[in-house]
Image (cartoon, rainbow, N blue to C red):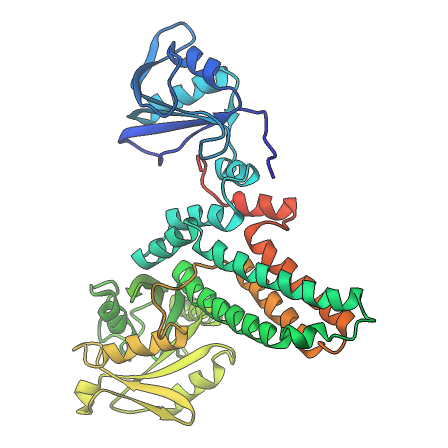
Length: 448
């Protein structure tokens, strides 16, 4: 793309607050005079030098390390200065203010990464992976983001695009030379090539869907009558006392949230108020909020008391649960009921029996949540996908399926293959509208 910008930008690149070290990053064209005015030195490329950072009157603002990366061998593809000083908020603000006096402006969120993308230092997937690496909530998510940053996801997308390009050449060759007696598509086995392409695309889409869980996690709502053990189950899953547990019905008045990890997957567990008819005004508000949480859930764990099984009141809750939400019935207190933990199906619905108090059967719940999430069998090959990646992959899969059905209608087949290739190319940024780029990079932190 090579769309170099002339404005100098600067930002504090380290997190707010006090620290041993703070970094101010500057990017632009021709920064040697800028560095000279700021430090009184002409820094050598890619060598750390001890320097004083000077105010306009020549007095020292701070003393630290100066690094100079000349274009194009820098993160942004422009000249880049990194000023590594002491990590006090006041000192860093003074240093940033001095950079603005020298002609820089404050960088917008994600603008350093956006310039790297515009200057062909990163593709769009790699740029997004920077933000994902910073925001990773689990080690598995961080590893997946790092693989995307190193180009693994991009490489797979480019490989699929290359195969589509070859298929399009074969199809369009038939369009260009209709009088030829040789059946190009048959002789080149285009149908088999398209079939293999679609299988590989489906595999990537499945791994991307699994990887989305690493980014956003699974929202699991605990629902049921009062005193069935929702708070006890939250505490068991969290491994600590996060919710108050008593024998008094209605103890939980508001949603209690806790995030846990199972095999690297973030699970956002939400304990809600017991669902029942009540005249207590505060408890009513808590029950209304519980139903709102249930509406937004990915999975609802409906807790039952193993001693009584499903009562009419439990059934009334079950029939009111949203039809599109995954539901798992959990019979809690199996230790008090004198019944063993286990997993079984009841009318097509999965039912678990466990004890939140003793922990018996908790591993069954872990396994069931992973199954519902579609994580079974996934490991280090997942792609940390965003919603736009999934939409593009899904569109490419849809268009390539249409192309396979229209191989005997060459013009239509060629058009479907073109649309599939365009959808894939949007992932890495070859085809991206400016408003999409603005939306993506605006979500980055300042200084990146």
